Length: 139
Image 1 (cartoon, rainbow, N blue to C red):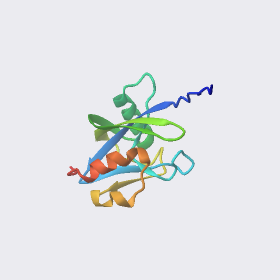
Image 2: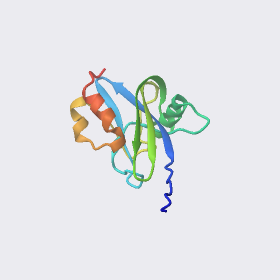
Image 3: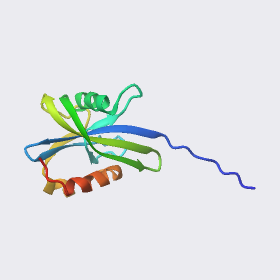
Image 4: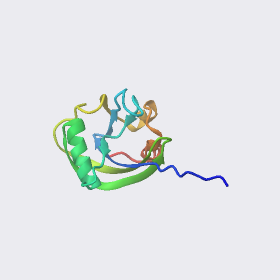
């Protein structure tokens, strides 16, 4: 009889923000040395056990971009399995409440128009969201 070993993959919970301004969406670039380095993503980060997803996003936007944000409604949730880990992402609509975004915890940031989405490479976990954004009328 062959025994099967169950390999458990850790699930990482992530909150990310969709921040629109003047018909443009804010995206950030991962540091080259990070997992999926160099790819573009939506600002946010890993949720700590004591935080709600909304609290996590407020903290991450402050740390990563130096801004204060108001977290709005949940836009989309995605679970994606990479070979080394599984991520559970919650994407929220956000408004800037203070400060101008700066790349404090990311390699770069850009304000892009919907027509520019195909010009940027995003992680596989963001594919469903990117497709949803392509079909959305941007504020």
